[in-house]
Length: 475
Image 1: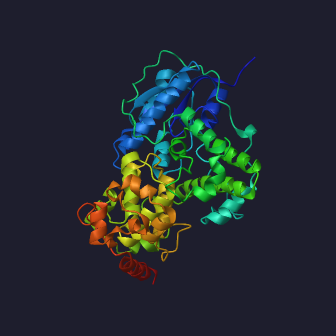
Image 2: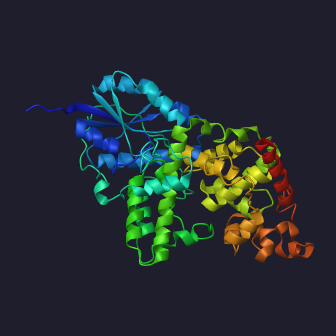
């Protein structure tokens, strides 16, 4: 009896460091008797100033984790280094592979890399990066959505994700044993990592988020804007590298909503699902409107006359702006490579609309620092805050950093953790220490201008300056 299966296929691993619900791996196993898991260390990415060392180390930790998972199934991870197009074709010739399977990626760099990789051995691309891949959620006329609310409505009109949609992890993978591999680089995120890399760790975090006597997902709508509370899933780094299937995350959200006992509980699950839908939305925007990678979605805003003061930017990066909530967030980012989403919005608004610094400066800094730095979500978030993007906050919406601090860190726990100079300042004075009297400063053991900086800009004055800058290009 004849078979259509090839003898050997390559599973080209990119942003899918998992075995469960992996369409590329699933397709390779269906097509070939032997499958070789290959990861290519791409010098252009590893040496890029846009890619932070912390995130690279997290990826290496993830490679070690998936190598262990593969070895448990009779396989192993093969690592090579070089230009992907050159490595792939040479590797296919070396191994006699007749097919290559990979998960589709949508960033401009990924699309250019994949176009160059086409050679004698055919590459088949599958879904897996998004819950609903770009191009699947479209307007009636076939155009992509550029506003989130109608996109979400259409997204939700599709059938819910069910357990039957999730591809199980294979029990065994037959991989040739005589293939040379480089060692996975030794860099590791270390003890300061906010989360552990790997699929098993990500699945455990997902279970903790949606299960137990009082699942955090049910309080998500109420707690998600409070960086002083443990109210988020911390799954964004795993989703960024595909250590967790986005469909598995969506399944957890759908099931939590279905099992909710109260309206408020269901709102919590629905709100978390909405964040996953935002992720799909921004993947599509980057894939379908490539100009956003280097410029505003609305090009008129590329004409804004930014101040781009390097000293102000350095103060913002270092968490030395004199606005405690902003400084706490920036120091958290520097220390652990992660920042609460509410804090991301506040510090982005402050950089762009208080300091009048180009949002692309902040976008790059985030990509250099964040464990979960994702080109689509990071770009979308920054353009939202800058008022230049798709569903952008109106240009005249400018967060007041002091009021945001009072509202979302009312007891000052977040500030006290990350700005220890102010640990003895309490109450509303904590949120605007530049107004502390000399007696208050002495009592707190903190001299403003010496132990903690004065505000580098007056918010009210800066707001007016920014409104004029935006109005000038709007006409």
